[in-house]
Length: 195
Image (cartoon, rainbow, N blue to C red):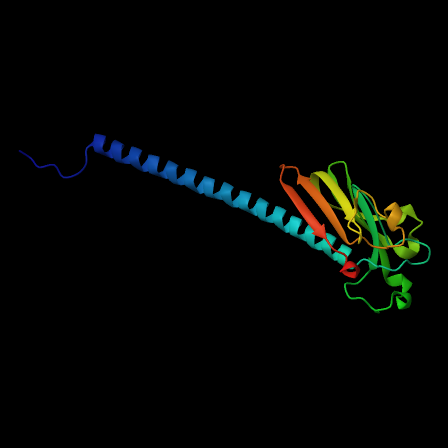
């Protein structure tokens, strides 16, 4: 009897089938890793955007001017919008607002419209020109509601409150957000001057 040295055709077909199955499983694994990496990248981008939004709104409120510029109130708010005046730069040029260069003051508005949260700015000197607003979409959200707490502890959906007309800034601003994925956030913002 002769000894066989090699593989039969059946053994070769079985080995090829096993290799094909293993290669297919490897490709599926690589594809799922690539999809997971893409999802993580999207979530990271979303969280960066949310962090930027939180930083910007916090910075705007903390830098709000407490002193009126001319006859304009430095802060006004409704349930889904608030406007404030602040310095253009993050550093306050003077401790006394009466010494503040007027060209360094900007108006900032945060508002919700059409399922999006906007941040708009314009130079205070051009406050009567509605065309000067420069708006930027900060996030897609389903709901944005704010309440304003005065120094007397009263909470209202608008500012100034009728009995708080002399106070320029609220003590706290409480904003509630619901994003397009039904995640809820609640922010408690405190103006720097109100602390």
